[in-house]
View 1 (cartoon, rainbow, N blue to C red):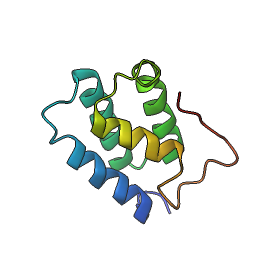
View 2 (view 1 turned 30 degrees about the horizontal axis):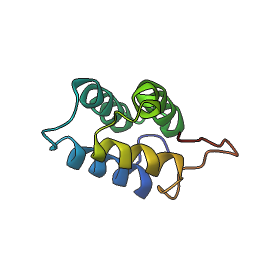
View 3 (view 1 turned 30 degrees about the vertical axis):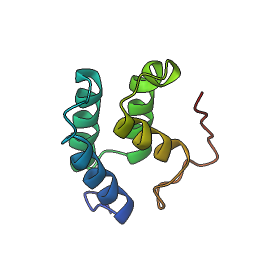
Length: 95
């Protein structure tokens, strides 16, 4: 159903809210997380929203410049830690 969030989406939003409390976030990370949260709350397609987030922060991840809380969130996404979010066979790597 459109507009109805599953448990994985609710967990993602809750995790983002916790991460946003971190005073050590870079402005780029904060902006990307707020965009993800807002788009998920609007009911946008979760995989697309998360893929966009991964694309936005990947340069920081490749340079090992993510803050620890965002690094964990990034890693959780690519390791499919959010059950109920299917990547339909797509695989991601963290360098």
